[in-house]
Length: 252
Image (cartoon, rainbow, N blue to C red; front, top):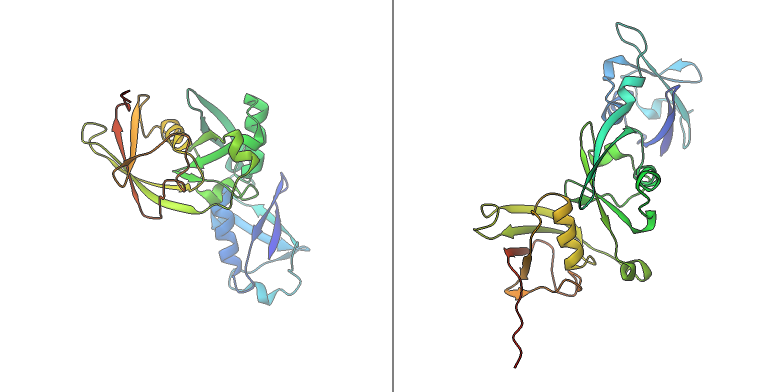
């Protein structure tokens, strides 16, 4: 069930289980706000929740219940410094430093990027550590975003927006050639409907590849920029090899 944590500054929702203890709930809050468990006091209707008890011990807590969070420290309540973090938004050709709240959702970050940069929200795909943040109403912290993290912005093609098929998540290894980046092997999670060109742009945006010309090869076949990974028959766990160079076509 989802409950609402009320901080006094703002509020946000989290998913909890009936068998979770109060301390486990506090640990979730720490993961989101970076507020130590020992500094937290949770209360419902003025009654403090005890660390050793489970949610089953509080039948008053149901779907949508508002739980008050108070923060105590040697200097007194100090929630505000915990709630703000600095992150870097990476575009294909530039970077943008922004301040966000730890409770911010993927959707609200997209809206903020749209306001600052004008990038259409529908065309925007956000990636952190090679993983697309697809669930728009999850908190950034649930994807591991923290202070000074870098979030990459990629643009979906218009054709992909018009008719995006059911997607599968692929775990791949991008293997670069010996002459490129010291033959690095980079694990990557990506949707199978992304085109090779979009994958190339993503790797450039994430800083995995420097700006240059590359050939992508899967199972000894050169991959086409305008075709999807699914079209190329890429399966979960496959290797994609990247070589520096261009494809030359001879005419007869």
